Image 1: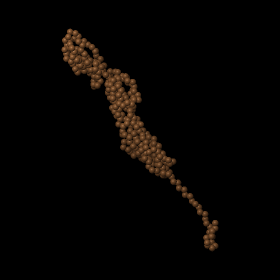
Image 2: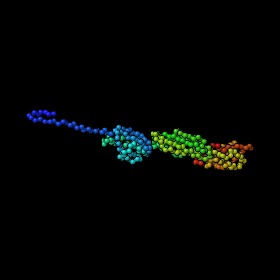
Image 3: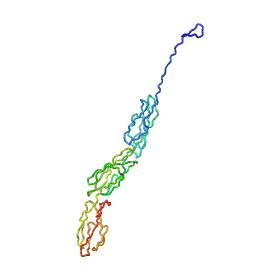
Image 4: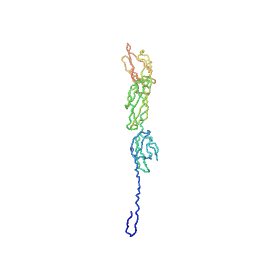
Length: 298
C-alpha cells in the first residue's frame, strides 16, 4: 500500500516481509537397552544380542583381559551379537565386563557395561582307580574342586561280576557291593558326569579292581599215622594266595597247640597217645598276596 510518512509531496512503497523456516532435527542419544548381566558356562559360545530403542543404532565394544579367563583382550569390536566363548581356568565363577558404546545418526551414547559371569567347568578330582574285595561294600567319595558340583554315574554289566548294570545313579559316595564270581581280579569302570551351576563337565572314568575272595581248594580231610610226618600242600584257585593256619591242642594228641603258622605244606608229625583214631582240625586262612583285607577263614 501507499502511506504518507508526513513529508509533503513524498510517498513510499513498503515491501512484503518473507518468513524463513530453519528446521533443526535433534537426534536422540542412543542407549543400550539389552540386559546388563548374564551367566554362561566356560568354553560355551555366548549369544548376546545388543539392542537399543533408537533405530539404526550400531555398537562398538571392548573387553579387557581378566584374571582367570584365558581369552586375550578384545578392543574395537563391532560384532553383534557377541558370540565369544570365554574360558574360565579357575574353579570359581569369574565376572567379565564388556564396555559397549552405541552410535546412531552421528550421535554417540553413553558407554554401557554388560557383565557376564563365566561359570567354571566342573571336573572330578577324586581318585581314578581303587581296589576292593569281593562282596565288600566300597566307599568311594566323588569330589570336585568346583563347589556345589553334583554327580551322576553309570556302570555297565561286566563279565565275572554278578551285579546288574547301574544307570543314572546319583548316590555319593558310591557304596556298591560288587560280587566277583571268578578266581581272578576283575576291573569295573564307573562313568561319572559332574555338573555345577547348569554347566556339565567331562565324563570321568573311575576303575575299581574287584579282587576275588581266596579259597582253599585242597582236600578237606586226610589220614596219617602217628609219629609220621604229614605232607599236606594247601592250594587255592586264586593265584598268589598265601596261607596261615592254627591247630588247637587235642585230647589224645601229645603235640602242643600251633598258632599263626605259615608253613606250606604242613609237615607236622602228630603223636596219638590213645588206642583210637583221633581227629585233628587245622584252621587255614587264605590271603591273596598284597591284599591282606581279602581273606577267608576255612
